Structures are given as C-alpha cells and as structure tokens.
Image (cartoon, one colour):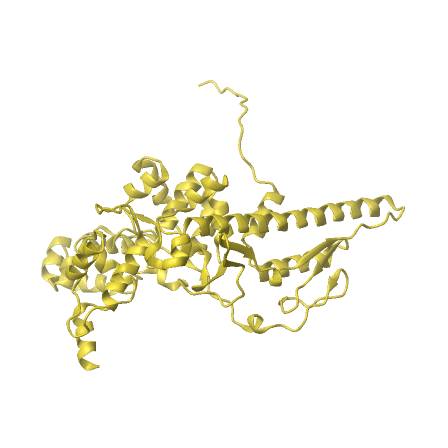
Amino acid sequence: MDMMQFQRQTTQLAMTQRMQESLRILQMSNADLTDYLVSQALENPCLEVHVPEGASVAPALPSRGIQAAVDRDAFATVEGQPVSLIAHVEEQIDLAFFDPGDRRIALAFAEALEPSGWLGAPVAEIAMEAGVDEAEAMAILERMQAFEPAGLFARSLAECLSLQLEDLGLLTWELRTMLDNLHLVAEGKIAELARRCDCEPEHVRENLALIRTLKPKPGETFAHDRTPIQPPDLRVLRGEDGWEVELTRAQLPRIRVNEAAATGDTSADAWLLRAQSQARWLMRAVERRQATLLRTAVCLVRQQAAFLEQGPRALKPLSMDEVALELELHPSTISRATATRLIETPRGLIPLRSFFSRSVTSDGPTAPQSQDALMALVGEIVAREDRMRPFSDDAIVKQAKLAGAVLARRTVTKYREALGIPSSYDRKRAGAAA
C-alpha cells in the first residue's frame, strides 16, 4: 500500500479568548460582574471601577484604581444558591458541542428537560421544533444522555435507571430484562420476573436492592424554581404607551478608563498601552452585556404582554430560538442573557426565563398552547373544586375542555404532580380531616 500525503484547506469557526471572555461577562450576575471588574482593576492601573453603594464585593479592596465599597448589605450575607439544573446542563453543552447546529439542537433538548431530569417531550416533537430529522436529533440526545449526573434526558424510568447502571458498568442482560419488566416488580411477581430473567428469585431480590440505590429523578438534586435572593437585574413598568423595561443600575458598577501618561521607558509604555486597550475592551464588553440583556427583556415583555396583564394562563408558546431569530442573535446568547436574571414586575419578582414556555400540540381551537398556561389551568381547576368532592384526573380533563384546552389524562396527571397537587383520593381525605 502506498502512503500519500495531501494538503487540504478548510474553514472552521474558532472562538478567541476575548470572545469567550465576552460570553462569560454576558452570563455574570451583577454581583459576579462587580467582583470580576474589581479583580481586573487590581491588575490594571488604567481601569477604575466605582462600586455602587450597597453592592457587595468578595475580596478586600486596596485603594489603587477602586473606590472602596461600603458595608456589605443584606444580600451579601445570604448563602449562595445551588446551581440550577438548566445552568448545569448548559455548562456541559458548552463543553460537548462546538458545532452551531449541534448546539441549537442540544439547547432544544435542554428546554424540554423536566425538573426530574427526564425529557418532557417526544424526540420527534423536539426534532420538528429544531428543524432537523428525528435521526439527527436522536444522535444528539444519545450524547447528552452521557452528561453528569447519569440518568439525565431519560424518556422513562427504565431508561433512567439503565443509564445509571451503564455509567457504573453494572448493566447486565439480567438487569436490562428486569428494567424492561418493571411492571412485574410493582405487581410483586418476583417468580415471574425470575423466570423471564432466567435466574433464581434470590438473584432478583439482590438486583432489586441494587436498583433501589439509584436515583429515579436525578434532576431533583439541583435547584429549580427557586428565586435567588438578590436584587433584580431589570424592571418593567406600565407606561403611557405600554410596558416599559429598564435596567436597574443601582447594583451595576461604573467603569472609567484612565489615560496613562508616557514614562519614556519603552517596555513600560508598551505595557501601559496594552493595559489601556484591555480596559477599553472591558468597558465595551460591559456595554454590550447591558444592551443584549435589555434587548432580550424588551422582546420577551413585548411577546408576553398578556402574561403580565392576566397571569400565567395567558402565557403563549415562546422558545429561545424564536427570540434569537427576532434579535438576530444565537440561541446560546439568549440562553446566557436570561440565565439567573430576575425582573421586577407588577406580579412580583420573577425569573426572566418565566417568559419562555414550551409549545404543546393540542387538537383544541387554540392549538398549539403553552405548557405553563396549561399547568396553570390545571391548578385553577383544582383550586375552585369542592374540597369534599374533588375532581378526578378524568374530571379535570373535562373541565379543561370546557375552558378550550384539550388534554390527555396522563398529561393532567403529570401536570398535577409537577404542581405538587395530591391525587383526588388524598385531597378528599385532607378535606374530610379539615
């Protein structure tokens, strides 16, 4: 066989260090941004950071280039919140996917992730939303099912447990067969399960003990729907011409670039020029961060104005892809801009991501509908029921249909459990006890 050498020229996207730093700045909270700029000012004499009164700064501050911060406020003493599931997943997406098309599909799967860590929509539906075929979406899902902790993005209990056993190197044919027949475990048919697994009942019980050590809902170890105790990044108010969005600048640091005079030393002057360039770039990066955050919030408020006026039942389907298309940005940029952001509204302090809602296909007159709106409807139906005669899930289906929403019984059960609402039997017992 002859060995031949070829030269080929290709084009490939590459992120420079400054591009990566700019993305990190975009995702930082106001407190993190303050700490970051303060640390940069310690090393750069051309950068001056004015910390707003009442803001907290982690390190002790020398006087060079920085106005000393005032005493730490109440927000500074609060213990840091646990990382959210979506933030954890997005960090792994950043490390696993570099192709823009693959990242877009991966973010679509991340949006469909339930608090339990399971996938909350069929692969075919997510593929359709992402504009790719199901095989391509499935290839991305298989890569994402290797994320930590094991069991994320499972589509069923059996798959969730199977992913965890595979991660531990313990997934045998016998265990796989048991997971495929979990209904026999629920029915207590150990002998039948042993027959299908071609083993003794004692081995089945040993395997069940192993399975019970796994986590059926790996996403529950993360924080969900917990509003971080921190000042809001944005504020929305009702103006004369509609809703108006503004940045809350009280917690934002102010930056100033000091023009250093020439010293006559060639190496020192070159270093100062680089320091000035870095300081100006930081100022522009912070300005871009603020502009992107404000543009995104304005778009979300405009799209979901009915949500602010009428509540969760008025939420309409809205994805990050749609917002990114309107603003001519990448979906990952929208994801970073909305991560951990809070907005002050007439309805209280809420996460900016509450304005997103996954579309749910329905046969009703208002199809498609927002998943969050349908969940809110289920909550409203239960809230107005007779406590002594609570609605069954089938009855909730009928009530929802009267309200113009077509839901399957299993969907009602899933939404009810996600809202923490007990079964009709348990609600009736609680009503009788009261």
